[in-house]
Each structure stands twice: as structure tokens, then as C-alpha cells.
Figure 1 (cartoon, rainbow, N blue to C red):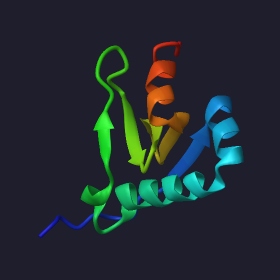
Figure 2 (figure 1 turned 60 degrees about the vertical axis):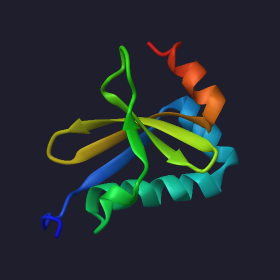
Figure 3 (figure 1 turned 90 degrees about the vertical axis):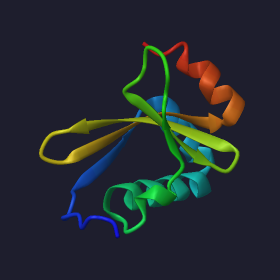
Length: 101
């Protein structure tokens, strides 16, 4: 059995690039929010398909949502802040991570 976790507070923030994508893809935004909720407070966080991004940005992660990928990082203080960096189709999002500063 999995270990029991206490309540976690979290907030999701979006960069301009991520917000622009989600503005036209509200269905993917909902899937993303559901995935983050499951990951942080759900009973089956292992069901969320995440991987750490390799290379310079090893503090970035990706969530796979069908044909889309969402790149994010976590900032931990009193609450967890999920900073959404990029979102888009699989091929495009990885190319764009190379241009991040």
C-alpha cells in the first residue's frame, strides 16, 4: 500500500507562453489541472505520466497529456507553486525548451 500523505496546498502559475497555449486549449488546461491535483494530493500519483527533463534544465518536468506536453517546475515554500513554463504539441514543446532562458 502507498504511504498516507497529509493535505498539500498548491498554486499553479503560468508563463505568458503557457497561458497563450491554454487560452486556445481549455480542454488541455483542465486535463493538466486534474493531473497536477492527482500528482500532489490524489490517491494515485503514479498514474500521472511525468518525466524529468534531461540536460541543463533538470529541475523541469513534463506531463504527457495525449499528444500534448506541458513543461513545469516546482517551487517549494509554505505552499507548492507549480510554475507552468510551456505547453504544446509533442514535437514543438521540446524544440522550444532549448530557447528558454
